Length: 390
Image 1 (cartoon, rainbow, N blue to C red):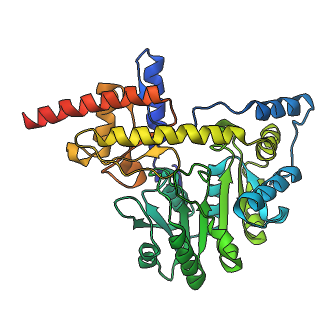
Image 2 (cartoon, rainbow, N blue to C red; image 1 turned 90 degrees about the vertical axis):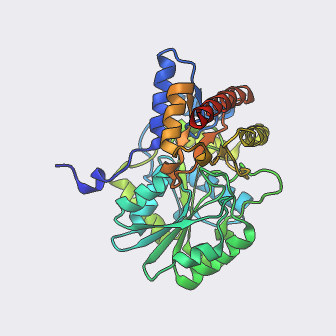
Image 3 (cartoon, rainbow, N blue to C red; image 1 turned 120 degrees about the horizontal axis):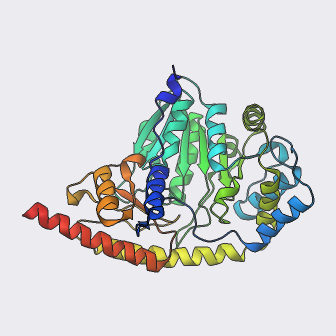
C-alpha cells in the first residue's frame, strides 16, 4: 500500500553504519567509528550563547517561512565577503539543514523526464533526491583521483539534461574540481542551458595549495543558472542545529519558499539566531578546526597507503578519505560489515557512494583514535590476506 516513491528509496548507509556502531558502543564494545560526517568539535561558545539569549528573549515563535530577514542579510553578506557573489534577500532561502535545502532544490527544479548529471563518487542522498523528483540520475565517472573534468561532463549532456550537481570539495572523496575545469563546466552549462547545483558545504575545508571556486562567481550568465547550497553544519560544528541556505534566482527561491511553506514551514527560530551569530561572529574556531583536520588528513592518508592491499588518493578537502580496498578481494559492503563485526571498526561502504571498490573514512576524530582504528584495520587486513593465501 506504500507509494512507489518511498518503496524505491535506499536507506542512508552512512547513518545505518553509524547507528550500528553506536549501538555496539552502548552494548559495551570498544568500537572505533569512522562513520558519520560531522566534526568532532563542539559548537563554539558564542553561538551557543546566542541561542540561549534567543530562548530567554522568547524568540520561540514562527518566523517567515524562508528565514528571518537578519539571517538572510547575514547570508548575503557572507556570500559577498567570501565568495564574491551578490544576492539580495529575495534570492535567498533558509531551510532545515543543507539536506533539506538540496531536497527543496530537486523538487522545485526537476520533473519526470529530466536528467541530472551526478559525478561519481557522490554523496548518498543526491541520487535518492533526484529519483524522488521523478528525474533520472546520469552517472559521470571521474578519474582515479576522483577529479572531475568538463570533458567528462560533456559526454553526459543530452537534450534532457536539466541539472549538474557539483560538490567541491567532495563527500566522500575529498576531491576538489580544478578552477580551470570549473570555468569550462560553466561554459558548458551556459551553452547547453542547464542548472548547476553548487553544494559548497565543505568550502572552508580546503588544504595545501588547493583552491575552491564558487562557479556562480564566474559571470552573470552562469550565476543565473547556478543554485548555491550551503549550511552552517560543518563549518561551525552545528550539524544538529539544522540550518541550511540556498542562493539562486528569485523564481527558484520563490518556488522553494512555496514548497517549504507546505512541508516544514520555517526553520527553528532559536537555531536561526545561533546561525546569525555563526555567520556574523568571530571565525577563529573555523581556522582552528581546519588546521586540526589538515593534520589528521595527512596522517590518515599516509597510514592508509602503508596498509597492504589498500591504496588512497590524497584528500584535497572536506574531512574524508576514500581508499580503494578492492585488492583485499572484498567488495565494499563485505569489507565494511566484516570489519565492524570482527575488528570493531566502522567505515562506510563505498557502494553507497557509487563505487564498490572503496570505503569512506571520516577523519573527524582525534589522531589517537585514527591511529587506533588504522592499527586494527592493518592487523585485520593482514589476517584476511593470510587466510586467502592459505
